Image 1 (cartoon, rainbow, N blue to C red):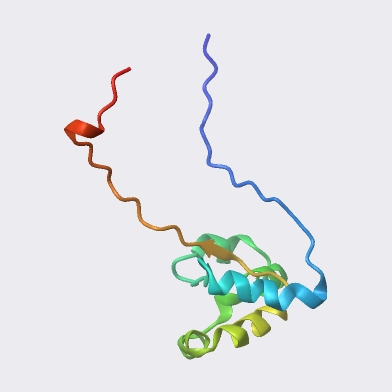
Image 2: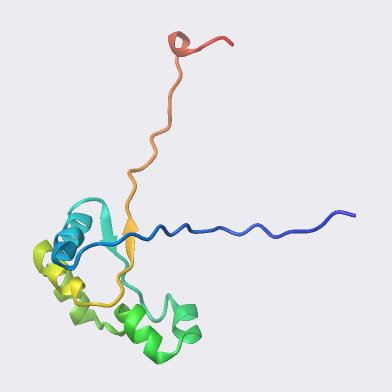
Length: 114
């Protein structure tokens, strides 16, 4: 008899230590390159909002409490100022922005025979 399994996506988290004196510059490097801060919304992220206790949400998912004005202020901030503000938070979630995939075109001269 076959065993039924459910496939689940997994995230691999590789922890590493950053010295406190280098933390702001590390965050600045993330923001300057291809990473953006993941800002959560109570309506869109309802599962997170209902699942976690208020103390956990305040520490790990602090962006749930931001209103529209605070979000606009964050977007207007300089990257250095953003890094400085984020260094004071206990948890920051970043999204890595990948470039869009470009479909490959194979011409007659680009084909390979195996």
